[in-house]
Length: 299
Length: 299
Image 1: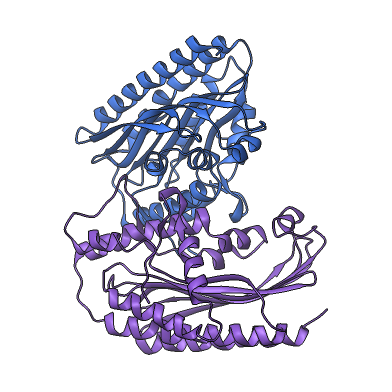
Image 2: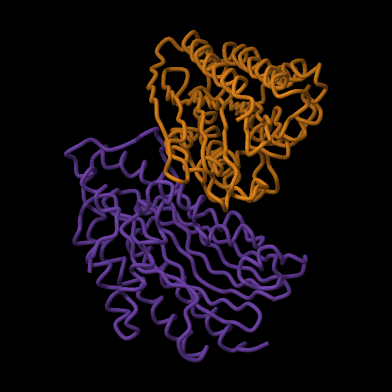
């Protein structure tokens, strides 16, 4: 097996990042309670297939959140392997961090990020990204988030491409491609240098999650909000659920590779509303916000 | 084009049934408001492709409900046609009624039913069914619902098969096949006699929805309930959303055939909760109810 040291190094990195992100959350939300589950899985053939450390969090600032790491390996479901471009005989190895934070205050954006290293047969690649889902038109936050990722990607020069990829990916195709939020960056099948170099590049990038999000959350967390703000958030959370269950490849991948259902669906927000032809009242900040769920040049 | 008279007759039947079901709802829920939308669609090639009549309802008994009819036709998305077993050149024609009622009182079960006639190329078939999603272990209701459908299917003799099909279909495969409710009957690709005979058989069966459900709703609607009952309902509604968006072929079919998104997703309940490793407290009626979301012989 190739690249064993790099695989181990990358998994240790995301475990360390999990600790640091939860520490940042606690600094902002001292009431945060952490429910940690360490779990193991079996692969498609019933053999030991790795596992993970799921942290489900709830507090005063964060209504519900998941900050998870996992390292899974073993035989693939042959039907699913062919979707990945394989023959069905390959072994999978994948490690990464995946997180989603759903704040209570509608002025604090929801955020999602994911960074992973994947190996199928002889191929190794990296994927990930971070995207923001705000519920109020504080557009300076959107610019700050995008600029943070643009700066972090300055050396790679991939911000324009990965920003456009995110715009295309995190959208509800059944709603004329309306986005779930205001985007961010998304990449998959990334390879540039050696496996070791690329692991370090992606690890460094993953650390940018902390400065990209927590300053925004910190400056909004005490902002007063209205019942209408909350109602708007609950309906937009419905669109989030639609995306995650109908379109998200990470969710499909997890459920199809015998992943741990509770760790995968931790991404769903605690309280949600759905409504036939729901739309915010005209002339409100929420109607204004609806205009932002489409690709825009925020940086 | 074959069977034009039968197609027209079947579509008129489901339109009439829509009126009768909404009248039953109003009888139980005089505050019910009806939001009707008559809509048209374009097919995959951009040509006129039929339409429908969506009725979104909300009242004191029913928190949200949809009772929809549609008749759609035209060119299929070739990739989707091949999933249906076709070559991609066939024309689709499909008409039916689809309904879902989400009551406010957790002692009144949620119910879903659907009856449709489908024609692709030279083939004609019928599909449909009805399934109940209760939130309280009033098991006599479950027996009444199943017996109603068993009686309605006495001549066809298909209750055992269609009940088992329903048990297999309406379940969350990502949750070890836990069912979304307590089942009912489900059938697809039904053909037995001539197209005209089969249309009459399925039309007669669809009328059984009214006596299968409304007596149960009527006897529970004034039953007092607790905050814990409501909380249990909200989490179980989360499982309903998971099924509809992850697994339901009707939802996938609708969204993949350029269906009207708002009419399809009307099935989602208005208020929903999700929670990491959510489970009801031991020794409660809700823990008891959890045992009922698995195949059982209710009739």
